Image 1 (cartoon, one colour):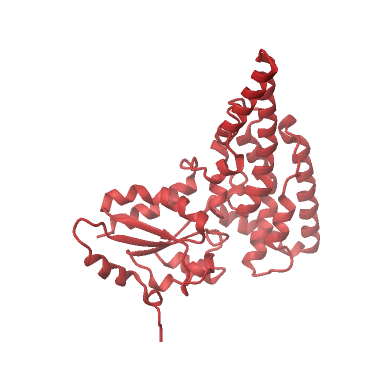
Image 2 (cartoon, rainbow, N blue to C red):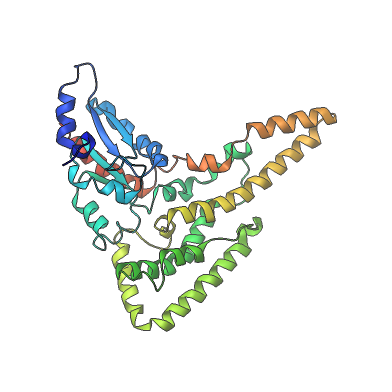
Length: 334
């Protein structure tokens, strides 16, 4: 027998609890997310709906047994408890692109109270390429653009697209040994110290070589699967996976930590040095130089923190899909 109130928690229970609240207290909607870092992301999206229905979203990374265990699998254990007063918000991983390949994908697809990122994870959206240049500005207080980050990430996306298809193909076949997501992620990381000059030409060249070598290998060892990979690519185009969008559907932490941040850190380093040189050249004496440089550096934010809290992805078509789902949910909220 359940011995904790939380083990019986469901949407109907929360609705009854809300009915007992004083008239001046807004009813709460319980929102379970995967981890602490997801709370701010989903609240930024959900906040605008609070005024529409005079409700309050209580967002928490919470597991069924009230343990410290977190993550998507823990959140999805609440699938049968959902309703308009209790909703779940999760990363899609491959579940959006392969909606029938796992228990989690089936749960998400069939439940109107489970909301997904559509991108692989929240990290992919934070790396939305068309607004990525703005991350550098608070990190450097320097508005110069040494490279076109949007075009660079587009080029990166084009390169990884064909090998991402192979990763998705093996995932769709539930093959967890031939070419795993970890194998894919290790393959598409960029050099740890990228050369920012010439649009990271050396980095891109290294990536192209690694990807092409792996594709040749897979086509040789799995020649009978080539046509099926092409068929899958045609199906996934209907879900907006193409060369330019591939980066949004790869493993998010790899994109965030091992691609975008590596480039941004190097770029920020160069831009800060340029700014420090400008200050140094204009300083009247050593004390002024030291004070101005210290002041400048103190005003620059950590680029990882800026990227981690980036919300400038609202124009992304996948964000619009999240909004469409939430719009429908809130319209039917009584």
